[in-house]
Length: 385
Figure 1 (tube, helix red, strand yellow):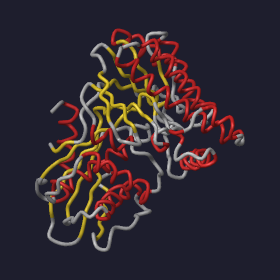
Figure 2: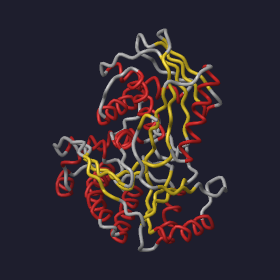
Figure 3: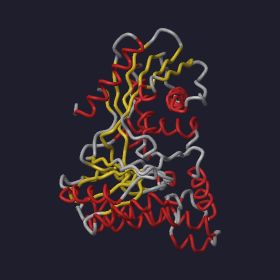
Figure 4: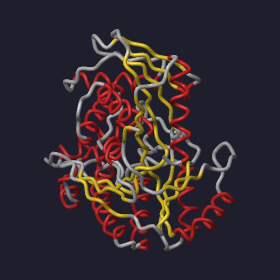
């Protein structure tokens, strides 16, 4: 266990012991992710290229002898939530973090899993609102922990599908499968090219001399009540107008012939072109062709900014500064669902110090602070520790 995971393990087990008076039966870790390219393509049956990262959520858990679930959140000053398993859990509007726990347990029950009551402590070190999928890491960790506690064997793809249903049906974010699947199925030193229709996974090795830099813009995201769900409706409408199941099946000629309104056309154009960029980027990354990858990342950001309209000025400024600092030896783009969050940059490891120094000099968050900068290597997916 590396130092980052050990510190989080110590924190979640200490929280559990303090709140419940004994050590947990087991601890599960599920990582966040950074998406290298392929934004808003997952719920359109398209392609994405994420990797799991080091920051994660951990769940400590033990059984109890009644029908209740009791949860403590170490990251929210040991805030507590308790609810009955029968009938199925309902929403807790006063504590949004608790809905991810309740939603995952409800989704597992709907999937036919018989769960026992439990004591649960959760803790994480993923930056909140950064677009690094802290919510997916939480639902996957909660799911894997409860499955293990009850001796239920389930493959990671099925676990990810149930975690997706928890976010879509219970919490209300109409997300695709990418975040949950990469959290469950990540592979060290590799990005995964995910076909979001077939769920076929293709390993894409990231050379040891390539660095991934994540820079938080300082603009916190919130997707459930924001425009995210509107984008999903718009792309579904575009697919229906072209007579295809999803925009995965459309092309630019079909889009031109459909004569949709300007906004719907732009939304669809982003998804159609982003799918091809993602396939091309996977090929470039496998060849360590950072110049080609950088051009694709730049095109992706422009498409997100102009066609999908999910960036914000601070994000655009940060991406431009990253691209200037990196030059033609890599690239940068916004990552995640949009409307704030983080940017991802890829470059030779030898360029890291210079790029970091440039960003720390030129970029300030909207509050005037230096941005959070983290460096990552692709890590493994969810696991019982």
